[in-house]
Image (cartoon, rainbow, N blue to C red; front, side, top):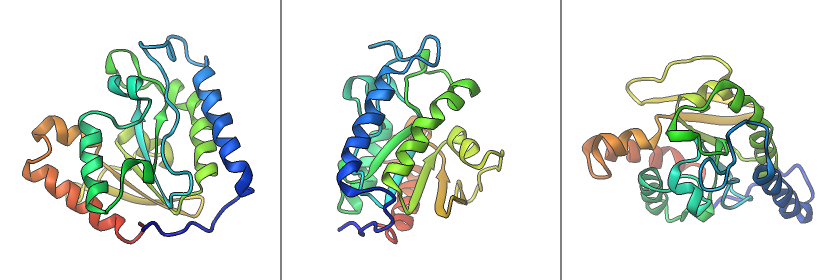
Length: 203
């Protein structure tokens, strides 16, 4: 059962309406040339439970995510679904989003200007959900939230920090483990174990 998040910053009745405004703004966005083109570089807003005490942030939208309109679809999504399953949860129980809400052409890394232009949408989602814990995946997310290039701890492959009073933890992106060994490799299973153990104190 999820811990109740009592740290709300806006009227409960207005929060779903605010979510709709954010979603429509993301889908209509034209700030970045070449992005948010349907079926090519399309965007997708954050997905899941806006009352979740935990928020997951990925780097950018993948190709498969354009079809599902759900961040972390495909191999990364399978790893996250396994993590959620170990905790007795489903993806819809946690709020998941991306630093860049569009799919970069040819899966290229997001450009600094794209990250900067998309950041207000992420900040609005953080304000909406008001999570106790932020879990970020990948260097782009870590560097954007810290605004500095702190290296990952190689033993745990994670970095801890604070964001406006919220606890943050950053891990290597699950796509790294999916590409390297799939779901059942020893390294992937260790990665899953670390995240599951960490999340038990929050969900």
